[in-house]
Image 1 (tube, rainbow, N blue to C red):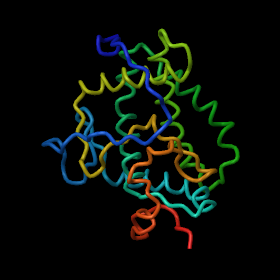
Image 2 (cartoon, rainbow, N blue to C red):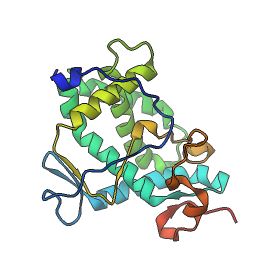
Image 3 (cartoon, one colour):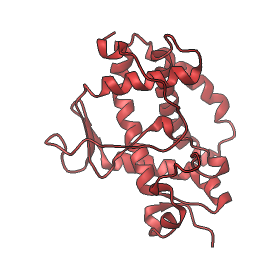
Image 4 (cartoon, helix red, strand yellow):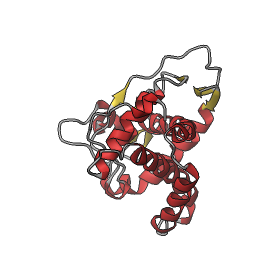
Length: 224
């Protein structure tokens, strides 16, 4: 395990709020059509957009119940960050001596149960999104479990270790996507999009502003 992966982590509260993070500025690695470049591997804007559409499709039922909407810019940022994290996960897991194949099998086993009630037309989108989320969370928990007294603490410590390691990698993200802290997003489609603590709702989730966006820039239909 590298020194950066061993670095002590501060305990933070995960799954609590949406936290905007500074994005890497565009650089010479980015070519037209690239959303990000991760250690020389390009992630195309079209791939991010397709994944963001999947996010939206999965959130729409809950949003409809609440008459709420989400800006597609937020979903595109979350999609981009998910794909960037996935592109880094294998190398991080290897340095942390985590068996990613075993993690993959465990997550797939869990998904067999959790996806049983997902409508057939959303199975593909749900499988991809929750597989990526599940593997990332499992790896972070395993990386941060030393000295942790709870699953939440292990997750928080693992996220700190991953972010410290990530800072040493060559990652360039198109600034239009920004970054979101995936461990601070609490997706709850059954009850209407995202949960955030009082007083910490960022502008990106302001319903009045989101509802005023053109239809192609928002997910969901605002209440009439």
